[in-house]
Amino acid sequence: MTARRKALDPRWVADASGRIVECILSLEAFRVAESVAFYKAIGGEVILEPLFSECWKLRKRTCIPTFNPDLKIYEMAEITAATHFESGHYGIHEPIGVELVSVEEIDLMVVPGVAFDPKGNRLGRGGGYYDRLLDGFPGISVAVAFDFQVFDEIPHTAHDIPVNFVVTETKIVEVQNEH
Image (cartoon, rainbow, N blue to C red; front, side, top):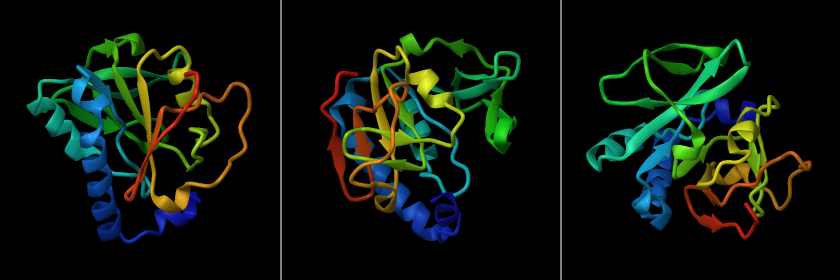
């Protein structure tokens, strides 16, 4: 799945990502959120950068993950239009010189993944980083993916944290779960 995503035409990724961004902007959960968390796309993932500037325009607190090598976890950091980035863990661009934000302070978190199902289960890269971020997260979680990444059912375990929404370029699936 990761290889298929990396092989996508960049113009197609940009177009499909734009449609996904529009879907996120239409969510009531996004409209009422005062603080949001996204990620910086790598390897053909859904591109969310247009949401950053939209959030700043709407004066929403905007956060992305940054890796803590001592604890071997991702933590959320607030970013602004002036934030500088450098290549970090997994080659992901991470903010430098920023304030950390507790996940309890975030209203809506948009998460990546390799595969998803309509029950909100997500298959990540295998490190459990987002499961740890989502564990105890009180807000609304939104998985973003391209249609080909959504399956009827994917393998999951008790420690996997399902999301509240799965958003693709053609649909928004609101998940009925206890999270």
